[in-house]
Amino acid sequence: MALKSRENPVVTKLNSSEFNSIFTEEVLDLKKLFDKYQYEIRVAGGAVRDLLMGQKPTDLDFATTATPQQMKEMFTIENVRMINMNGEKHGTITPRINDKENFEVTTLRIDMVTDGRHAEVEFTTDWKLDANRRDLTINSMFLGFDGSVYDYFFGYEDLQKRRVAFVGDPDVRIKEDYLRIMRYFRFYGKIAESPDKHEEKTLQVLSNNVEGLQCISGERIWVELKKTLQGKFAGDLLKTMIGVGVAKYIGLPENPNLEELDKVLKRAEHMKLHPMSYVAALLRNVDEVTVLHSRLKFSSYDRDLTYFLVVHREDKVSTRPLLPYEKLVLNSKIKQKDSYEYVREVLKYRGEESLLEQFNKWEIPRFPINGKILKVNNVAPGKNYSTILSRLKDIWIENEYKQSVEDLVKFIPDIIKEYDKKK
Image 1: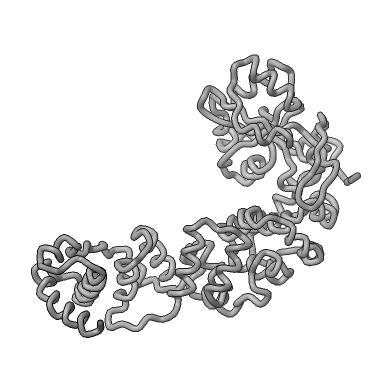
Image 2: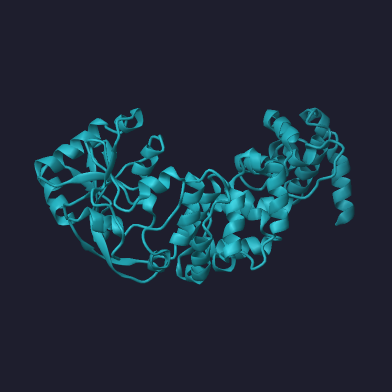
């Protein structure tokens, strides 16, 4: 696309403490290698955006005029190990510098053919052409090692305005890769200062293209959605996404439970909710969790947390409010550590700050009875072991974990009688 761009792309020169902190020995050694072979190399994308926002980048990606083949030859001559060669067809080589730090270095490229998911690329030495193929203006800037920020498409101004804008025509950009719909929301949460400053024409273009998300893999969608739900304005952005029509194309019900989501946001948004709490709020039952998981392919931890939230989010009646939640941990069939974390999230989801504080102080007691003790007390081995242990555990829990082994074994004869009657 022939876009309006700057004649002189250098917009500012950084010399901040965050900028200077990126120059580890490994980064400087990487630069020396490229200088030695007379290839240009600059920091690319997200790290430039973060530095301009006064943040230290979590990782550095680099762009270069060297082709993958030239990089491979250079690193081979210099005895630098290369790892993960899967990125080579896209132009990315990953050297391990000083056997200490890995860096992704990608050749400048142009997207020649796109199908809404993937692109066929051609390599170039033109920095502006590479910037031209990137999704958002705030992600299309480069940073020289001298601090010069190169911005061809006015991402610098957009960042100052906290504006999320596509490079060129949003419709064209989205049709190149429909995942950019989800990326728009992720970066909005990253840089915006309020939840409702979307440009209507941008939202309309997103809405016009949501159907394209059905051809994007669930794993790629979930990576973007999860990061959005870990950022600012998670609940509001989720509602805006649903408003533009993404729900049915990413595995959510066509009519998500927005009423429940609003309740959760009102009582608990300030409690640093896990991404799955936002997701669970939109789902009415475990069947809807199963459908969504089959589309987005959650990790087993995230999947089980969502089931747990949907099953246990309702009110629990008890003379001691914390007791039902303690039981969930002590009677859990999953890892106790996971069940403990899941209960914490249920309490956050419900906005139960006082109960959560009590639960955080609760030390998980150890149930003192096991099969060996039953055997010593003349209980014949068999299926009734689990029944007796379960019943003894209930008694122990109801009495707030105060009973000793001696106290509990006294109940065994009566439990066996009950068990025998039911046979």
